[in-house]
Length: 505
Image (cartoon, rainbow, N blue to C red; front, side, top):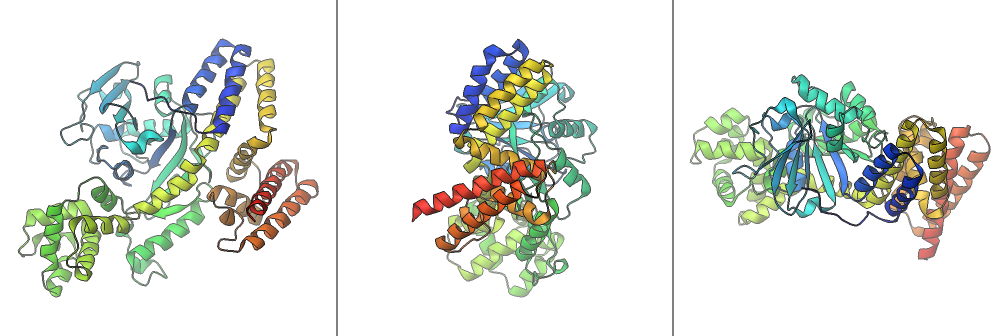
């Protein structure tokens, strides 16, 4: 089965598609075949790889984002494989072997991919999961095995994904992963930064940066608030502060780091939280305050303490919400005893931070899907021409790309290229200028791009014009040749913002 054809993401993707179509008769058969693959990717939904360390809760977060518990979260064969979740007209699972064969399987009785596939996993390239799910119409989610796994084969698969060193069949499994959602927990380790630095879409090595990468601080409920200065003992506040510090550590590799409680998000968004669970929580809310506080000290006390709510029911609540989620639910019930099960579920979902992650996904990825896909495709086209070994072919492709980028409507591609150059360190910039350039990749909001959120239009217009002039001068006087190339792009970005804001008056 193939993914359902859909329109191109926008005019930039269409321009790159036309470029590929026009070049195919002018290049070697091998390069032309590669261009055909680029065209296929351009017509596919934006593809986001979810990566991170083992036990960081990647699959739990994938389920929450999709809104259905389809990715196995316990240790099993599937957690050792790359799994692509994409839209399909019929729900089904396809196991793709390294020799290209495919085996179709139904989803398990619980609606998830079977924990054990009944095949030799060492011969499996990846798993394709097709779902009649509206979320996946414009977004394909690629779940990857965890970095740092004790399973050498799983590590190899993930490192191959991150490094792009895949066999042809496996490469097709992750090819076109144009963006990355990186999952961290309480501590950012050196190998987290290395993994982000190494992340390259199989589309010719566009490195992770603020244009195509965000990170989430998962399991935010496990943070000890007393260890985070400024949190005032509040767990969520501690998570927000820690995420802000991690963002400073991981920048410029990511646009932002957002806190989330994946378990609570998954349970409340996938139907795991039921009216029976709400009734059980009402029973706990009826206990005296001293008993409740004692039970909430630890998981052992919560399940072993004698009370009217059966042990099995309490164990199920822990599996779905953990102690933090149970405590938040009881706080809601104390304030609103008559709240319905549906409203309680919504309040828990709000407390999980999932809406914030989705909003950032929309702002950084979905709203820029056209530019991200077009830029990744151009990187692929450049790499294919370079790999051909024919200098004439390489020059022909280079000239065609330069003609495309010279068009005013292609400025966004120039900007994405500049952001990638400075975020990867390929073009060195002083810290203050680096931060200014990266703002263009952190948000589609003009005021935030200018670094002046909430300021009146007149002030934004004046600032955009002033900075446009400054960057034009910098490009001509004082910049290195590489910096000058970036500076000209930034100058034009400010000038276009100035024109846009004046047009609104």
